[in-house]
Length: 277
Image 1 (cartoon, rainbow, N blue to C red):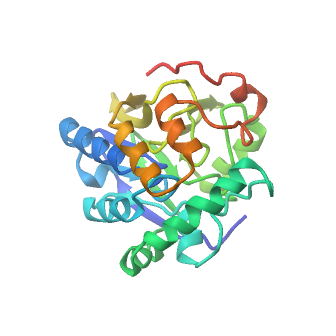
Image 2 (image 1 turned 30 degrees about the vertical axis):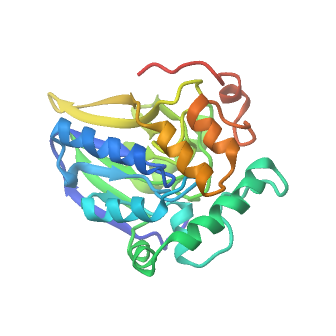
């Protein structure tokens, strides 16, 4: 167990909440989500980001500044941790020589070169985790897992692997990011929710991206995985203008990941199948 996590306690929350992550430097997607939050009337104090604001796409500085100015609650994903510590890779622990590893050697240095000292300074202050009370439960926000920011946890990940995260955090509901796919998994009265990401599609053959809405009714937690469209063509062209991997700009258009290297067999098998939402 990591005893050095910086955990920000938010106290009690009520009303509709918005959870998202994986902006991945995709400014058009973030811009659209901010407009949706205004339409829904969700205040900034009820909006949570699960990290990886910076990533594959073309506008890291714009995304960091927008998140900062929005005044929402955000945690550091593995990318923010690596950037603020001056590391030379994204910290995903991709297999050396894999396609993801080769692509990260292009987009990560680009992101480093584009970020201002003010943006890096802001990342220095980000907590690792968030915790709050909602609908009579303790909810806990993390990136990969409680024990490892870069751990990939999927719907098919065995519950025996997920369960210790609830024990360590003392939470009944975990809100996670990192893996890139929206899902929910409930067992033994505990619930793992992944909001998915807004910076890349969910490998389902559509250019839509995903966030998570929380609400409460009669003291009970309700959740909805929500998909939305945005100007993905503008985001793809911006990547191509900066010489970023065309495989990723192609993903913005097709909704299909270039490869399934990080995915377990169950998630690999669903590539190209449109998700409900």
